[in-house]
Structure formats: C-alpha cells, structure tokens
Length: 219
Image (cartoon, rainbow, N blue to C red; front, side, top):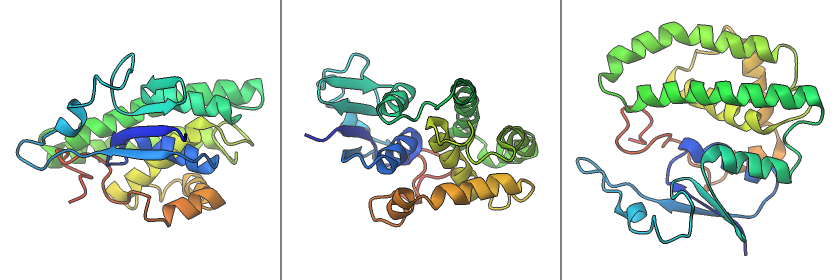
C-alpha cells in the first residue's frame, strides 16, 4: 500500500513534501480535502474525518506510511529526508540544512500572514519594501554553491524552491537583483523528476493558498 499524503487541494505546506516524494520517485496517494467557497469556507470535508484517522495530533498535512502516521509538515519532511539521504552528507551540510530550514519556516510564515491577512494591498507594499533584505540573506547564504547546504541537495531546498516560486508569482521581478537565486530556482526545475511533475496535471499551479486567502487562492 502506498503512503498517503493528506492536505487541502492547494500547494501550501504540502507542496515541498510533494516535491520531495516526486524527486525520490516515491509512489503515493495525494489525498485532497476541499475547502468551500465564500462566504462560509466550509471545512467539513476535513473536519468530518479529522479525529477518525488515528493521528496523535490530528492536523493537515498528514502522512501515513504503513504503521507510521505523522502530522506537522516539518516532521513529515524530515521523515522523508531520513529515508532518502536528504539530511546532508557532511556535518557542515547538516548544520547548514538545519539552520536554513528554520529560517525558511519564518520566511514562509510571514508570507502566509500577508496572504491571509486583512488590508492585503496596504500590507503588500510594506512587505515588498522588506523583501529584498530577506532575499539577500538567502542569496548570500547560497553564494556560489549548487544547493543551500553545499554540493548535495537537502530537504530545505524543496521548501526554498517552493517559497521562491510563490514569490515569483507574487512579484515576478523580485529575484532580478539575485542572479544566483534565479539560477538556483531554474536548476531545481531542471531536475528530471521535478521537471516531469511540474509539467503534469497532478501539479497544482495556481492555488497556492486556500479560498479564504487574499492572494494565491486560485481565483
């Protein structure tokens, strides 16, 4: 029986997990739950089964792999990383991967708050003013390396790609000052399993966030 990845029918927290599964050639079921449209944004497709799946901490995303039943995206990402040698090949790579993974979580959280928050247009202006400073930190950290941790791809690369890609949808010119990040983004997309997935009908293109979001709701 193949593993089951359960999440909303959006990219959100699950997309880096999907990218890892695709990259590693893991066969899996992409189980979608669908949030209703405005004004109620009905979540019953998930709430009706939330406490029936024998999950210790019922939440989305979840990952069921045989007797392993995980929630929390970080735990799922690291579980798959351990299975497929994506934690780093050297101590230096492991340190770098762990550190940048935490920074990427903060980066993503700030973007999600913007996308779902009130007064989006006003807050977007403020967000864009600080975005170059944040991107410069990632650019400097990457430097001339192929991947964030070094020569070998590691689990935060899947998160970083997704966040860069979402930001390119948000502001198409945001990486112009950072050619190494643009090259990094392109390099990731050129990986054969990723290239095939991105071109497939299985890959969610527009719906970055759920229907209640002010940006990336698929509308």
